[in-house]
Each structure stands twice: as structure tokens, then as C-alpha cells.
Amino acid sequence: MLGVLGQILIYIVPFLLVLTFIVTIHELGHFLVARAFGVKVDRFAVGFGKAVFSRTDRHGIEWRLGWLPLGGYVKFSGDLDASSVPDQAGLNELRQRVVAQSGPGAERDYFHFKPVWQRALVVAAGPVANFILAITIFAIVFMAVGVQLRPARVAQVQAGSPAAAAGFQVGDLITGVNDKAIKDGSAVTRTVMLSTGDPVRFTVERGAQTLHLTAVPERREENDPVAGRVKVGRIGLGLGSTAADVRHVRYGPVSAVVEGVRQTGDVIGSTLTYLGRLVTGRESGDQFSGPLGIAKATGSLTTAAVEASPAPGQMAINLLLTLTTLAAILSIGIGFLNLLPIPILDGGHLLFYGYEAVAKRPVSARFQEMGYRAGLALLAGFMLFATWNDLQKLNLFQFLGGLVS
Image 1: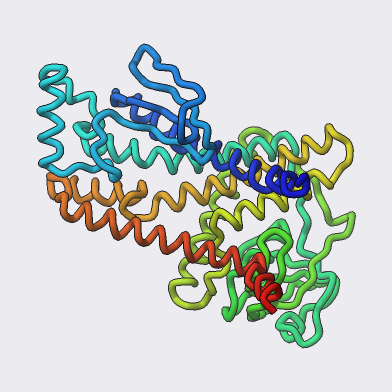
Image 2 (image 1 turned 30 degrees about the horizontal axis):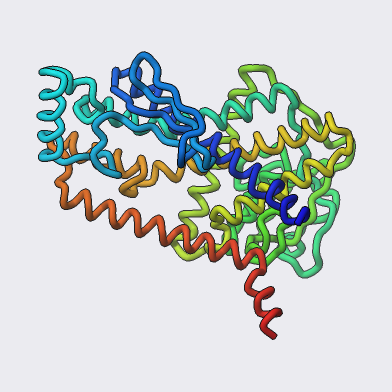
């Protein structure tokens, strides 16, 4: 019983806390920009379900804390449907109701009667808040803790591998990948992972020589301690750094923000690269993860952070650092996902607003309903696919097969 409770505390609780924090910041982005434009808001909720705390302020906004920590939401006055984009008939009905209740001109305080550019900024503010959160977390970590830069020194070359065929030797220092200078070995790993079947150009320092080598990564299945079983590109290089190679860098405020922006851009760029390769059939979809996979990764990172140091103070610092860094990465993912042009997501709203700006009228109720249903089906399919991936990575089917046999 204690073992099960411990697993829940390690895997589920940190995941829910991180997720709720990220979604709350996302909704806070919507809320702050909406209030800046004078939009009337009914409720700002953290968590779902029955309220354990609720207070209404002088502006009539209910601040609620739900018992189920699965995110949060902001409810604008006059929201008529799940998509929050009523058609012309819905707008007319809402206007009549508001005018009847509060008098002429009161409708101008409602989100749906704001200029389309203001509504677009309110919608975009959620994903932007996620990106700002990630940049802020990275910048704070870079200032307070710093980062260890481990140059890409070749420590091992597997016989018969693409790296061996390319001419790599132990002791080589990789200073560039695809004509882009690098400072840390993680950049090499990240590029190779997402380049299966494509030539990758390396700039290498070997003593006083500067060489240019090319290797084509092969797809290999590996058991990652955090992500589980995944198929990624590899060239057969083992990277290592000597004590003289490693540099610990702590950034000032301005440079930390710049590095935070760069780090966020790298995550978005890697995501776009992966999606592009997935669409063209050059990458498998096994790197997609749903709630199970993210919870497993959170638990693995939590366990590693706790085991890194037995001292309670250092353990707490490691845990805080791990979860905040994870929150930054997940925040980028949630911001990026919400910008996809899928109805019911923020990107779908922006798509509808783009049509409204051009056509001078909202999308018809029929097309909104069709888009909403298609978007819901697409997201449901994506979640099923991601969950299937998670179950396979966790070897659940092999476990069940072993029980049956």
C-alpha cells in the first residue's frame, strides 16, 4: 500500500502541480490582456470541480480554487459555446440580452463585441504567456545557478558506425553542426536525433587541423530512462568532456534573458523540425507523449533529483530546479500546441478571427460547429495515439502478454 502511495506521490502529484501551474499562467495571459481592454470577466478558476475556495471581487470577478488540479480557465461574460466564437445570430441575441439587462452601450464591455484585433490579442496572450514563462524560468536558472557547458569531445567511435565511416577519431572536438557553431555537446545530440537518413555536416578540430566530416544518422531503438523506448537517429559517437573542457557559466540579467529566448527558440525549432519530418514520413511518431508519458517523465526526473543528494536542503534545491526546468519545457509545448490552427484551440480562434477580419462577419454557426467537431475529433485522435505510444514505451503490452502466457 505504501509502495503504491509512494508511486502516486512521485509520479502523479508533481505532474499535476506542474500542469496546473502552466495552465494557470496560460489563462492568466488571456485574463490580463482582456482586462487591459476592459473585457468583462465572470470567473478565473484554478482547478476544476467543486470550489474549495471562492471569492468575488469588486469588479464582479469570481476567483475560484477547484478541488481537482488539472489546470484552470477564465470565463468571459457572454460566452455562448465551447468555441467562444458566436456567429452573427448569436451576437445579435447576446447584444439584445445585454442591452435589455444593462442598457445601451453595455455590450461594449463584452469580449465578443470588442474589435477583432483586440480579441485576437486576448487569444494570442495565452500561448505568449507560456513562452514568457519558459524564458523567465530559463533566465532565472541561468542567473542563479548557471549552466555547465560540455564541449562535444569524441570519447568513443563505434566500429562499423556512420561516425567511423565518416572518419571520426577519439579526441576530436566538434565545434559546428550544419555550419552552425556549437558550445555544448547537447546540440550535436539534438541535431543527430532528428536527422535520420539525412547527411549531417560536422566541423571538427583535430589538433591544429580543422576538418569537415559528414555522417548520415541511422534510426535506432533505445530505452531512455526518462522517455522510455524511443527510435532516434544515431551515428555511433560517444561524447565526453575532460575536466579542462567543462566550463561553468553564470549569466548576467540581460545575457540570461537572451539565452532564455535562445533556449525557447531551440525547443520550438526542434518541435517544428520533428513535425515536418513526421509529415514527410522521415520520422516515426513514437516521440509523441500524452499524460501517461509526461507523468512518467516527471516521476523519473523527480526520483533522480531526490536521489542526487541525501541532504534535505540540497535535495529540495535539486527537486525545485528539476521541476521548474520541466515546467519551462512543458510550457513551451502547451503554448505551441495551442497555436495550432485547430478549432477549439487558440490557433483555431485566431483562424476564425482572420476570416472575420477579411470577410467583415463572423464564421457561420454551421461551419463553426463543423470545425469544432473536427477539431475535437483530431485532438481526441492525437491523445489516443499519444497514449498508445506511452503504453508501448512502458512495455505494458509485453507485461500483459507475460501474464496471459
